[in-house]
Length: 104
Image (cartoon, rainbow, N blue to C red; front, side):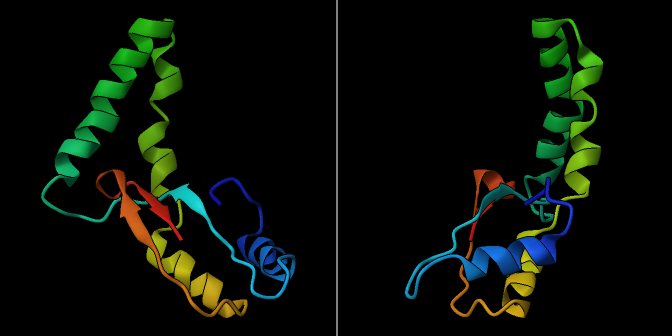
């Protein structure tokens, strides 16, 4: 959902398309909630990924955008609210990968 231009319209269309009894499932990265591991995860994203990406590809700058880009993502809780606003009823989500990914 991070790459769509209009989140509300996208969710409306995704809700409209499934047949009766169908499911809407979204797997996406999500903003990290502050927890005991969040500083370590941000260090990994801010420092480790750019260094490794630079060593492997020679283009470190290509991996520096990740932390800033991730901050712009809709978090799982807000996405659940958007889903409710378009009519989705039974909404559950689970955070995975130390809270950086969610399946809804």
